[in-house]
Image 1 (tube, one colour):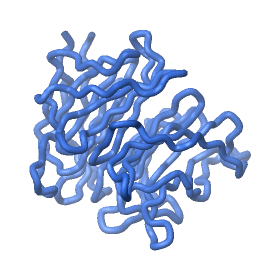
Image 2 (tube, rainbow, N blue to C red; image 1 turned 180 degrees about the horizontal axis):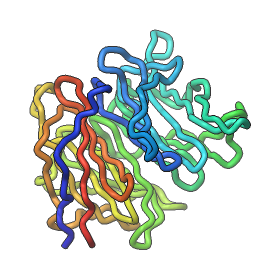
Image 3 (spheres, helix red, strand yellow; image 1 turned 90 degrees about the horizontal axis):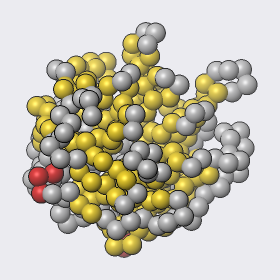
Length: 319
């Protein structure tokens, strides 16, 4: 059986701070991190490259959110999604992207209102089948429902105004109190999109799988050992998959919780928890941790109760 990840001691990123969980994606071999400001609703980002370590923080121009942003990278474009601020478009789902222009430099595209829905939480993203897949928790009379759609990239480009969105679909019978998270799976004879979320009335972690030509599989939840106080988060490396979450926080959102993780086996019939891989990390957070595979390791980032950003590096065990 695989053993738990072997984590390093925490490292603080003293130049940055956030009041929400962090968004991570690897784009053009560099690690991009985006976050809501510690004392403002701007969206900031920084880049970790092999050449010079972490860049200075930079603001994505003209955008803002009261929640955490979300990132997903394709080969050519880095997408950022968030729920908007302002009276007219509060909580509506917006996006922008970082792309290479004709002069070979990277530029941020102007923000676009997706006109697909509203949420007051972070948004789940994944790139699959030449589309960006988007999932979120609904608001209003159908609050806590999980809704998903996808933006086709077949004929899309940053410089073409036309977009091709699929209809927004509510996943029947499923709900959440936080962010649904997505990952693309291509191991164990799978070619699917997997979603994980924290249940609406329980602390269980639920999962479901979408395969080409079929709907979402019936959800299943992990055992009571894996109760979560926040939304989970995915990371994938070389056909292996990990989930992390913050343990039960109690009724007070300010109570700090320990961070937990496990390796997950994914196949076309659903997610199955791999035995004896449950682990914990000693640091505490009241937000969801964030995972990413980078440079052959699993990195976990989190925010403490003083809005400070930390990370730890996990060595991936052999199969």
